[in-house]
Length: 76
Image 1 (cartoon, rainbow, N blue to C red):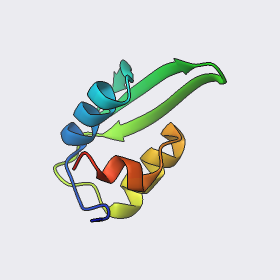
Image 2 (tube, one colour; image 1 turned 90 degrees about the horizontal axis):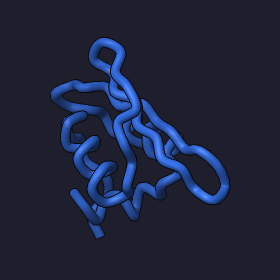
Image 3 (cartoon, one colour; image 1 turned 90 degrees about the vertical axis):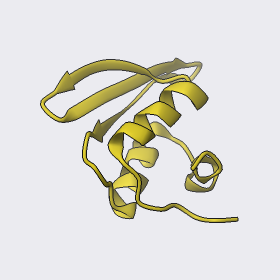
Image 4 (cartoon, rainbow, N blue to C red; image 1 turned 180 degrees about the horizontal axis):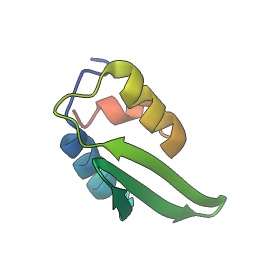
């Protein structure tokens, strides 16, 4: 199975909203806030609208969103 690869912030937002049911809860400059309500409470993350996100930045976004990188890589 392929791992994570550099992708744009816009692509990450599309995947999080369509596949993981996150909703855009705000924006501050070039950073978009996403959140969703779960039985364990509210989960949120911040995605920068950059042309290309490095693997480390993407892993940080997924850690905040409580999503396994291997699971997210299926949608790339």
